[in-house]
Image 1 (spheres, helix red, strand yellow):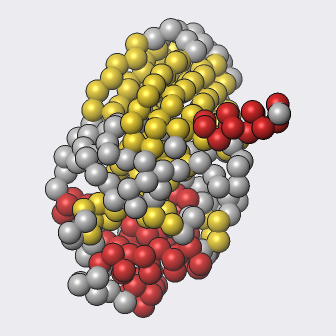
Image 2 (tube, rainbow, N blue to C red; image 1 turned 90 degrees about the horizontal axis):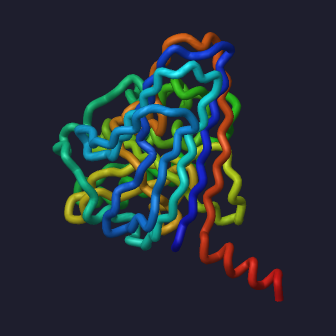
Image 3 (spheres, one colour; image 1 turned 30 degrees about the vertical axis):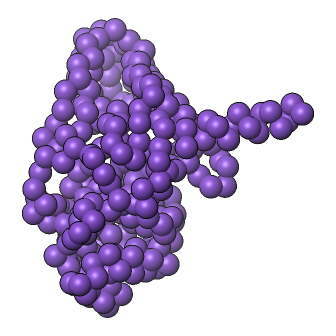
Length: 281
């Protein structure tokens, strides 16, 4: 699939900022499941944009500015060719040992209720880790309703599970916490997703999880959609949780209050061309 992405994040400040720095994990790396055809990050104000890598191998850009801007738009555009690998992540950069991804964080730690849920639905079989993870993913997809209202970026896995509601971030945190409670290394993935219903205008990027399966390696699980990852997924960054893979994190000095608006288009470029031709015919 040829996936085209246009992602704008617009900030407005109550008064001019004195300085800011933004850490951007918004650039994909190539691996056997995806080839980056083109990619560009364009800030709307003057500043320095420096590219580096973090400890996990994610591509990171640091944007810093010292102007008196009252607004900032970060525009990301690109095109990625993706391939269906049956959910198996092949050829991706992995710098941390597997045991690192057994670490709990505040967002992924489990409570007694969540651990009991994991043990009951997963029916953990060390000889069938893949089957265990699929049962876990399907149970979370069935048990936790997708709802954008009740949770925040700071909502923990056990809080979202107690409400039985959340967004893709929450369902991924629940999956990760459950997998780790069973002794299976798991990590958070941020990225983009081509929706099967044809909707291209989206409110936010997507998130899912990867877990380590003996004999296969890292495998992607998308509990929000109840599927293993496919060529509809564009993989951007990994982390222990959302905070480690968040598209944008940063600090600023001055500016007072802040408002933010996001415009995101994710589409199958080949499908869009075909639809355009059909409409012209």
